[in-house]
Amino acid sequence: MLPSTEYVEAVERTLDSRFSFKCHKDVSCFNKCCHNTDMLLTPYDIVRLKKRLGLSSTEFLKKYTYTHIDEQSSHPFAVLTMSENEGGACAFLTPGGCSIYEDRPASCRYYPVGKGLMIRDTETGPAPVDFYFFIRQPICKGFDEDNEWTIGQWREMQGLDVYDEMNREWQEIQLRRDNPDKPKLDDQKQSLMYMASYDLDQFRQFVFQSGFLNLFELDAAEVEKMKDDDVALMKFGFKYLKYMLLLEETLKIKDEYKKEYKPS
Image (cartoon, rainbow, N blue to C red; front, side, top):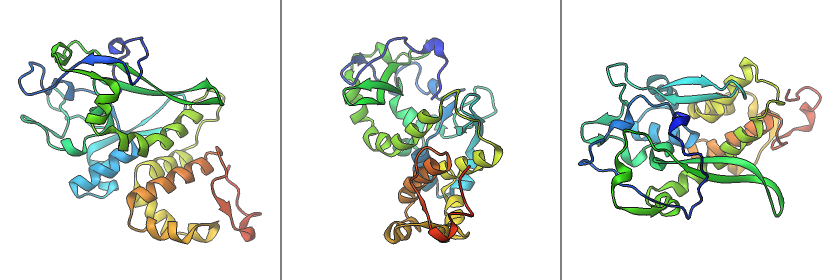
């Protein structure tokens, strides 16, 4: 979720930070936070949602999202589309709550906590470090409830361990590229980045129905798993992004093609 900065507390929190919060049907603001919000989706969000709805990634993205291009990094992001009727509700909201609750996006799970990632000095040198903050929107009355948590407990209760694990590598790619000194992506690279991040069904066609597999030296077991395992393909997509964006030489071109092909 990309809340207005006026609602974000300017205080960094840790997993041990405590807060009182509860969301339930009897709270006066129930469902109000699911309106008119810019919900940025992650690759693992798409994996869960497309499977839940029985759609291909291409179908899901076309029906439920729009593309946002970040001005600084020039990276493309999939953002959940709100309905056009009055109130701008989430497409998955019902009077009884969220219709995809078990597979809701990571940002929904974290709310009212926000999570960030930045490079900081550590004992072993500069490294990506998580930090947390609270989102205190005036409409939200959940903070008035008496259920107390640490952020660590909230993460565990919301099932965020697997989401954070699956999205970590992708978020680090964004962080490493989010620098004014990095060159902007051209249209082709934006399309490739969007496909490898979000449109896994199209990315699978790109990998298996082109000359891609002939170009690189790839592990046969990994290739076989990617044929029908979306998580395996998603993780390979991160490897491809690092190579394509010149962050790491994560893929090795076969000797016979080295003179002909270089990422640029």
